[in-house]
Amino acid sequence: MLKRFPPKYATPGELPALQLEGLQWTVAHAFRNSPFYRRRLETAGVSPGDIRSLGDLAKLPFTTAEDLREGYPLPLLSVPPREIVRIHSSSGTTGKRKILCYTRKDIDDWLQMFARCYEMAGLSREDRVQICVGYGLWTAGAGFQLGAEKFGAMTIPSGPGNLDLQCTFLLDLQTTVVCCTASMGLLLAEEIHGRGLRGRLNLKKVIMGAERTSEATVAAIKDLLGVREVYDIPGLTELYGPGTGLSCAHESGIHYWADYYILEILDPDTLDPVGPGEIGEMVYTTLGKEAAPLIRYRSRDLTRLVEGACPCGCILPRHDRILGRSDDMIVFRGVNIYPGQVDEVLSRVDGAGSEHQVFFERREDGKDYMALKVERSGHLGESADMPLSRAIAAEIKRNLMVSCSVEILPHGALPRSERKTRRIFDNRRY
Image (cartoon, rainbow, N blue to C red; front, side, top):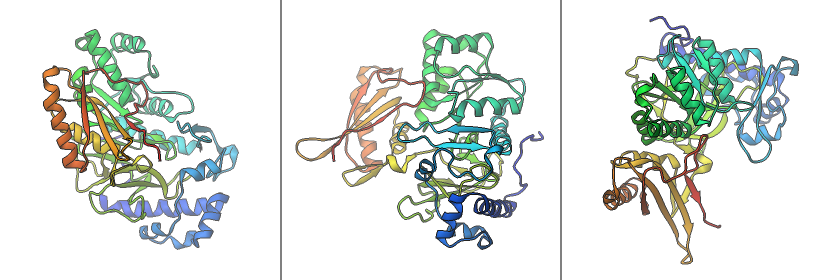
């Protein structure tokens, strides 16, 4: 079937030339129009004419979240203010907000990418898309809604929470696609299951973003809602917002839109490229963003690249799910632990439920201790707790090389959230 939102290149061999052209434009545009970038590039001794190959990307200085905060209210601004048609802000709660601005072209590019996500997920114009994410300054609501309208599907902007309303619309409008955070998806799925509504729904797909997603959560949502397809959609306000990639239907990674930005995976300490399949920090450089272009922006998000051709046939490259953040890394008894690694371990233990919490504390003996609270699967009883606890502790020891205590809780015992669920608690005092 002819794609309405295809990649800007026809074969993988054409991508480097496309990216180089975009990189050269971005550096020249930023140097010419952004006082911040001009100072940063001059300090690094780099001018637009120095960018002759993709290898020259390594000459460029990095940009960080602190740069955005220090440049408040309109950091990285590279166009006259009259060309700005919208602003969005990150959902961060510490310090000044990171505000990003958009030109008309930036919005059009973002919606083109988002419509590609819906197309890649196999939607048609007959679909009915219920959008259960936050609206306002956050990019999610506007992105999901306007992307669906660009694609041409019916859009139901129900927003987060309000489970009675969500269930009413799912039933009365016969929604076929739900867009939400993973936490909201699980909350909604458990509500549908509890009300016994599954057999009356017409739901086919779930598209989730805004937070790290574990395989256990995905499996629970599929089971409780009776859907076969759950997609992971990455998103970063600084880049554009959600919609800059989508997980593959073959569940073999997330295709990212390399025709709109360059993604580097770098060691967060050395800032050198990591080896194939190794975990590193996601660093972004945009190829055509006008109002607030990114040059080697350190996202702090961690993932790994997925090598080789994808079985789905899509030529766009892939990265793995987000495994955590470099600034969320926990050092426990000399071992670096990322939140996503705990998710990965639990997803491989039969009987472990979709929700867990991890606690770190320092006791009076001066030693650090790690404790897990893990829900058991809904079909298990208390008799499974002891063997399940031993199995989880053994898998944590084998995979993360640390020892921990494991407490098994009944299904539904841990708190749910309509937004992002906190699962890591480091209570140590340094």
